[in-house]
Length: 356
Length: 266
Image 1 (cartoon, one colour):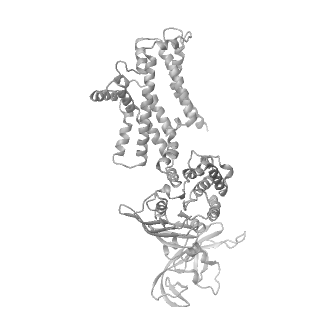
Image 2: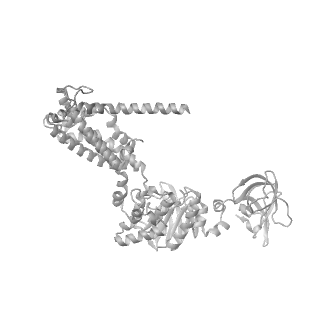
Image 3: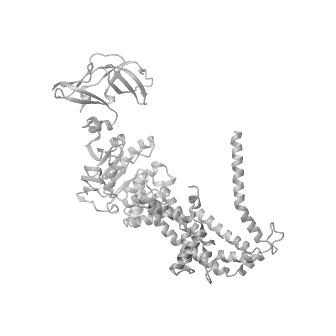
């Protein structure tokens, strides 16, 4: 186990900068998700930590000790690949024992540690199977056991749940979280799936174009992202352009269109051009106008998308902008269904609106 | 529905016809080898094992077969080792002239074998090693080089290169990773490539005919010499034994490594 630190990590191929000054610290025993769209450099970062590529500049340290220049096979890093990369000609037990054999662990201890690892991932009875005789979820767990059994300094997971179907992914998410907590190994999960990042990690680092854009705890990052791009990447959101027309300690008013003014929390400078970010679940949707709501927006339903636990409404405000709102469905006979073309009234609290 | 049946009928008729076409010469050879009379006739009117006893009368057959076996074993081994390196280079690495090298390596399949034989003999005379063991081995290596390259490239494209990185992350250096992970994955390609190379070298006539003189001779050459002077079924008896042994080897290797299916079907 180790504290992992990347400082000013750069990687370029020719004059193409793939990583630009990546700074990242993962505390001992904690789990960090590296989240970003494909091509943002997250896998490159992972490969640099594992030792498969040499950074152009910058440092990688485990517990303060630099590992730049240490070859991959001496770094003691556990790796779980998206396609698992199990050795097809070895049984489950042989796959798991591979790293122990390379370390010259004695036979009796090796057998014991393989058994423990199998138990940790709940695959004890399948020790003698070959990888091709197992399901994707089981292979995933073998791959995890193989990486954990060597007691790595750092565990690196590359899109660990990417190849699994939805239901299995949800199960494995819970499982992965338990295993990470029980083993207490410093972990980095690379993913492009925001839900995976938020639910698996203690902290999330959002990466764009080879740079870390923002790092924070999942709740903090989702609720109060520091920039529009982070908010946009972490779940659905609505964005409205506007100008601050009056600012005060009790809140500010933003003019979005001539007919639509929105009240937001916090004091902002008058005349400033801003962007408002509103999560779709922050709107309250009603079929009839009720008095007293703040930020009342009259709109018409343009599209209704049924999502199971909630319904997604695409609406067009009478004042112009198009918005996407979510409405949770309660009860079995959902009486309050919406029809296309129907008039609806949205309200949103000022403190649920982010101002960029 | 009836269209479907018609289609299946045509396909199975064609399939059986193709199979018969391939098997027929083998059946004829085997039957003729048990022929009772001196002349080759089909179907035989009487049966005997005489021609099997007569195999020993083919000039130098034991010695020539042994030489052929050794040439084939050496050429196939050397070529397979070289093919392993070549296949890794072709599949994994980008280098200048890669396309040219790839087509050059596969060219013996496209160039007439007789042309290769003529070229080789002129070349070896220049080098002053013509009509020796070396020239025979090198000549056969040129002939069979393409086959293991093909089968190993095929098995390399089938396997996931991430497993080597997985091995490295678990503490294996490049050599250990190669031995414990890469090589076992390439085994089907290596074995089938070796087998192809061995068999093609073993019964090659057109290259060998240019490269042998005097005491140096191979099995196909002596067999052909016998056929050109005699018209009895002894070569059929020899061929029957040959077919039997090769079939057993192929069945065994296929059962053990599923290699033939690797080289076909892609």
